[in-house]
Image (cartoon, helix red, strand yellow):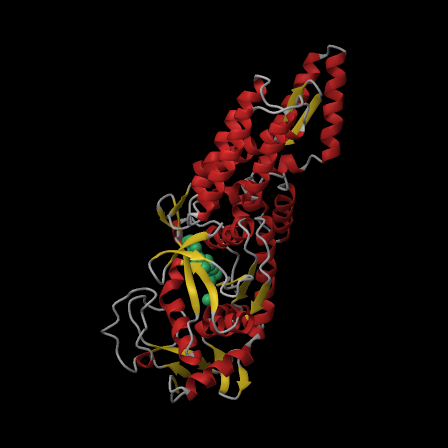
Length: 492
Ligand code: AMP
Ligand code: ZN
């Protein structure tokens, strides 16, 4: 099945297929590592994870490259303030990023590329642009891209840039979004700043050149898809197109995907507003990584996502419902045979699920038939109308679902444990909710012992003690489920 994805460049849904007939070559702008990733960043990365997983599920292998911006204005400024080399400053944030990446169960891109390890490729690109007459050196030794040399500038963001001034320049990484000016490809070294001695002078790369150079290094001059958050469309991606296409005279990326921004309670997330959350903040508040993942991916990528704690609670119970149902199927005990109704329900859910993903990654529409199937199957099981072959068929649908959403298996203990270890190390234990600390104080063995003691108490009709244990565990976030096969427990 071919996935149809909105293409910012053409303004329509285009089929997303590999030009080489083999693997879909995609580049996604990665993090700038001067701080911990926030949930807005992760919404974008998670939606790209959904894309790569959906492509694979529908039969297209991917070759996914993601960069790490480990040199830019902010990094240089912060490292200088901290009095350390930029590499020492960024390394903990790079490690933290990949830890978070794993906590949210994002698949590793096939290639991770650090900007500081690709300086020669960037320099070669600037030289090529200079030879094309599209780059010039300013008095201070910095190199700029001559916007007027690329008449198609603006074709991605569809901005009217007719008022752009020839020769007006900009050299900061972030600047006002509505002006188009010659942008810095290479910044001449300033005293005390990190710099490299190269054929085009001593200096450091501008932000945009890094993505062009690394994308072409690993994916070739022309590739299938380029992705990032919506803020990157202009000027970052527009600049990438200009400098890449001027250098190669080929189309850079055929398809452009932009993820809409995340808001918190309807407002822009910002530290000064007090509504700014990193993944770690949420883990320390006791939310599960799986629920955070499900919440951040369930609103389709082209819709604005409004993060709320109610939404996160909804995702938490959705994960619970999925897992409880999965356990119920895995527990087995179904009579041999099949019911045509359940077979049809499973077939329909799978088809609708895949169709929704193929339709511009509509994650909300993709979720719906799965939960509908769960409802129908639960009723059928209650009435003894779900048979062994039905259970198999439904498990197959869940496997499909999980190949993309990846929340069925309970792997939530590890991210929480890591977040707590980090909080302890960085003096942030005051941010941890008391319930979480209490729950962590109980080991699995400790819980098993209390559960066994409770069963023994019930046998001797000591119900007071049995209830006391149940309450004690509940306070620490452990829920007991009595069933005919004994007692099951789980952490909330
Ligand atoms: P940065 O680390 O700032 O370079 O950002 C990494 C990625 O996160 C980029 O693709 C950004 O577009 C994206 N991003 C930043 N803020 C948000 C947000 N509030 N919502 C969604 N994506 C965001
Ligand atoms: Zn980029």
